[in-house]
Length: 257
Ligand code: PGA
Image 1 (cartoon, rainbow, N blue to C red):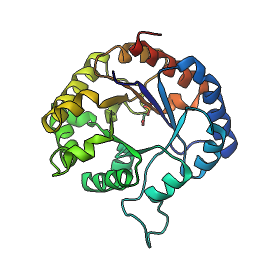
Image 2 (spheres, rainbow, N blue to C red):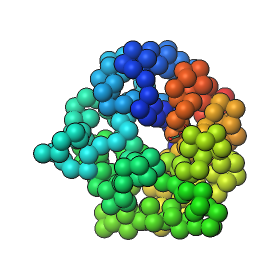
Image 3 (cartoon, rainbow, N blue to C red):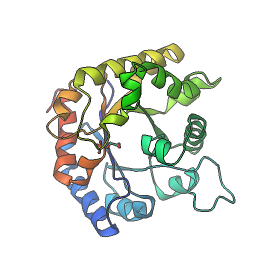
Image 4 (spheres, protein in one colour):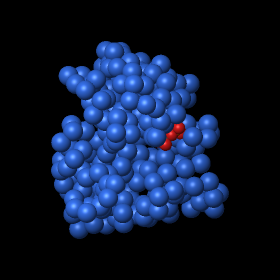
């Protein structure tokens, strides 16, 4: 049984006080979400404050990115080790905004993933196609390319050992347009089948999250799909009530919501 996971990606929103208040609201609701793993990913500078609020709770913290290098003269960067020292559990790598706006290539993303795993944290690797790629019927080709760095690596089994994947169709991120549950399920099944080629046992245990305009009203249908193990939530993660409703919806995967 794959434990459902719901992750809030707060992006570059909020102030320290609002970040702490949001974390506190999520913390207070964790009793309604038993069986669902929850993580929140504030901006780097709010991580310390959020971790303080979450101390002693089951709600985990994640970072939205990380440096691809271990350490050294890289002005402005944050290393995986620094995140681990803070008490972070997850690190998002390869979000489409990082790929599109900050020039991160598949090679950069793989280097980041390796840094995260090297210090014992869990990467959440984002993959997804643009609208143009979907319309050209290239979705599977694009996803295969985004995954090949991990799946074709000589140490693929080790890379897969502690990894979460997130399917985030770029056309659905922040647009209010969601993949239908059937569209998302088809891609999730494709992803799991690709992973099975490199690690059959691991594929069955791998959590594949869906991200892209998940809201309280569409979460139940998405989470009812057999291969959707939770969500990576952007906009709706900034409203405590919406995020909590999405976490509660994920309990349906346990037969509980
Ligand atoms: P969204 O963002 O829920 O606002 O579409 C998802 C994401 O970027 O992870």
